[in-house]
Length: 334
Length: 248
Image 1 (cartoon, each protein chain N blue to C red):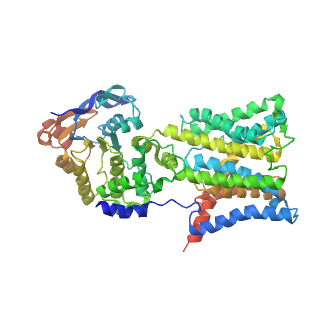
Image 2 (spheres, rainbow over the protein chains, first blue to last red):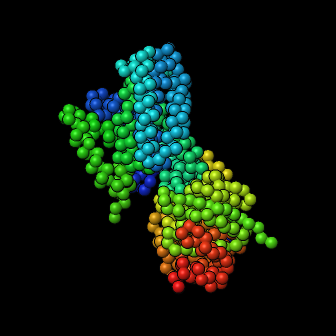
Image 3 (cartoon, one colour):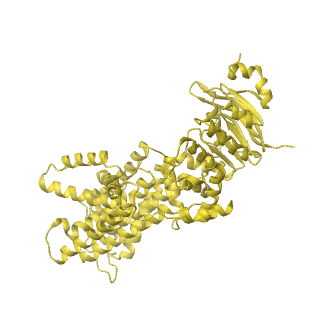
């Protein structure tokens, strides 16, 4: 009897791969390589095309990190947060405000961005997670709007007009005034964020968070204090998004409350859902696709938002599992 | 000499004007299999929800192993040794069968604030999960995604998850619901194997199963217990026959 179980045990002790299906693995790796190499090549060959420029891709990478962090709670945890852009704003202001006062060390900016965002997530999450469904969506949005109006009212730091950052965070030997270095740093942060989420969602903690998404009453009946686990996930996602904000602030060198308006939160949600909520690379596919389509359409017409909206609706209606689902399935179709 | 494991005193619950639980008093002795039967709408599931902690009663007390748990949340009752299964299958549809059960094992293996090591490679979770799956006859389906199971298999998984928390007391809400004859018979065998080892409160419509398994039976009608006794006594009870068994 017991020998039978021991023999079976090995068959049931595998960790899901980070890239999904074999076909999906190839496409994902090619995609990530293109995202790294094309802007570097374009920069080297001095190709002046906006869509492959280091600047354009760096902005996408920052948003992709934010989308990856949102995916941890939205995709894996089932917490539909409509206020995620607040963490981008907080992270950016954690660069802007110290820089304004002459403190330009990255070793201050980045930890501060992560800690402040995580703290905001802890306080707002503790309240928001007592609600569910539509109420959770609305209350997370309300908290983000509170942050928006808070920074709007800070006259000292530009208020409505925003705040210009005159020098980027100083890392010591790594000089991110060089846009290629900033690009590489952002790319490394994105890869690290994806790997962290990969480890988390397959850990004991991650299984609990996914269980809460799938069936919270059952989790409680099994003995889990679901509130504590969901709140922890919310705080991790907030801190990670704060990092994205600090990178974005460094990239734009201009920050304003606009970075955290509710429409920005909506865009992040859309990137996650378009790319494939609950998949590891989906938010990256989503962020890239979203920003590219936005950029292309807006170069044709000032009414770009209309066809964009139609595309978004169609993609949600007809692509099951988002772009990641398409990539994983497409290859395996017999 | 038996001791009382679950002591329910004067439990009341109403929804608007509907009284779903109307002063239920019930004692479950350690080691017994106690069945609750009653017509549809008698308030059986409402009663279970109050015992498990999912629903707060309007009045009355639930005492478990001498401890008043009336206001104790569901997840903590689980750690006192109380497990429940659901009438409407409540498993993690997107996870494999073994992941479902391993998640139940994990709930009672310390805290889960462990963020890095993959849970699916931990023998301490996988082995107990496989052992439970063997007991309920699902071991050959361990790798299957729960949503791909048949109805009967999902009901087996439902029980397996309750068993995997290693409870002393199990609240089973219609484990045979919707099962065919053969599946029901298999479930009766599973419950028989648990009998004696676990104290069980079984809510069930399948009368053959109830009379085959139960040590004692309580009859719930319109939120009240109208009779409690051994199966033979219940079978003979005139009030039960008119209220429930439909033989006036």
